[in-house]
Length: 236
Image (tube, rainbow, N blue to C red):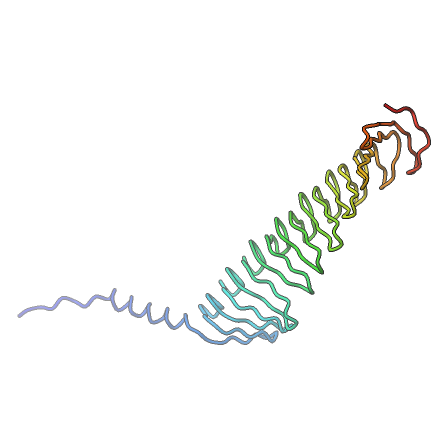
C-alpha cells in the first residue's frame, strides 16, 4: 500500500489569510456620525489609498489617505472654489502646495498646516516672493505693489524690518535700514533729480547729521531735527 503524505495545513492557512485580507480591503462608502461621507478604498474599516471625502462644512477632499486621514497628495475645495492642492501628512498640509483663498494665491511651502518656508503670493496685482512664517513675509523677500513700488530686503512679522531697498516707482529710492515698515536707522535716499541724502532716519524722518550730495558733485553737511534742517555746517 502506498501512503499519501499528509496535506499541508500551511497552504490552507495562507489561503484563509488571503481571503480574510481581501475581505478587509475593498472599495466602498463610509458614513460618519458628523455627516461626513467617504467613498474609495478601505482597509480595516478606514480610508486607505485613493478616495473622496465630503466634510460637514461641505468641503470636498479628493486624494490619498492613510489610516483614515489625509496623507500624500490631495486637493481640498470649498463650495466657493477656494482650494488647497499639494502634500498632506497626518491630516495637515506639509510640504509643497498651492492655496487659493478669497482672491489670493500662494504657491510654495507649508509646515504645520500653515504657509511656512519659501513661496510666491499674489493678490489684486500685488506680488510677494520670498520667505514666509505663519502666512506673512518673514526673512528675505521681494514685494511688488500694483502701483509700481518695489521693495527687496528683510522682513519680520509681515513688515519691512532690517536692511532693504525701496523703489517708490516715481524716481525716489531708499537703501538702508527699516523698522516696522518705516525708514529707521542709517540709509540713503535718492531723489528723482539725483540728490542723495545719507544719514540717520527716525520713523521716516531725517534726524541728526546728514550728508547731501548732488549731481554736480557738491557735498554739504547738514543737521536735521524732526525732518527739518536746523544747521548747514559746510560744503565741499
